[in-house]
Length: 395
Image (cartoon, rainbow, N blue to C red; front, side, top):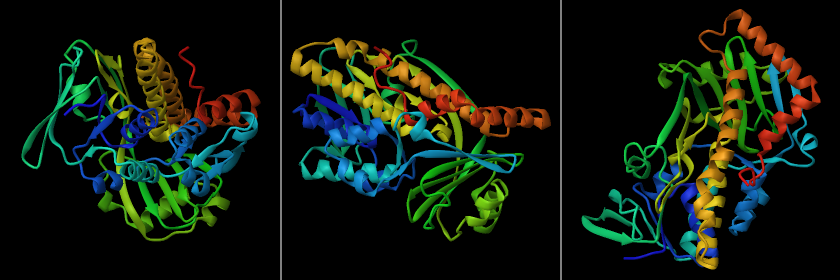
């Protein structure tokens, strides 16, 4: 078999890349080790920057996010028992974010790929990448007990943090940067109306961090900071709702609608970046190259910006016979990635209780938050990063 671009991974980054390449007339095949149901079953982020929404429209996928997504014009910060709104829309001259679940993005892209009759190999076993330092890269895998080899011009590694692509890079050719945080997030998904339907609420309290988010006007996503060694089984629904309320201001706590949880899990937090993101004719994108704490809602959006840079580079290569975009892909992507890493690290540091926070550290956080909500300049920095920095940072 042969294709122009072999895409490893059928998550949102791989599917979005495949859709953009298809729209440009570039042949591609996606290879995924899991089943479609497994891919759709992943519970992930749901806040989209405007650039990500624009890309979905560019890919012909904008209808549902336009009609079903919920636009957020502000974010709210709770500290010292008081809630403060930051007018993101006003501070960024009209930019917004949109609440639309990653599962829905994935479903839209999967449906479009299926309707177009494009090739996706699910439940591929023993996937491996070869000869990406040559002009004729190859991907090998097994399906239904048979061996397959796919020749291609390029390999796009969209296969996540634990994927085969980054792991196949020769030792010494890649540098990895990582910070592991000493706590996790206990998250729940529930079919209850969000406590704040048109904004996201971040809470800083002596009991730890909290976050009130949403997937739709009838489905909410809530989080509380917890120790890494906590067990989900120790958290009854009642315990979770009580703990969430204790970390919010009284008025908001009173408004929370509770109900049975559909999903409950504890996720660790880490920052991770791999440099570079190009190795011959193999390119990394999304979680294969970087992880951010979910505090800043940047994971899916960074993956989308990677895909924008990479799809543009491939289109330029095939349409104009120019390797300029390919040669600068890693540099351009990393310029935006590190700025998003900085924002996510800063917001995580500001909002969470660390083992060494103590009473003094808590008051320092509150003093910084007080300055943040009362300074137009500081609020603007937060708002600009929250809605997403421009895609042309690396130019």
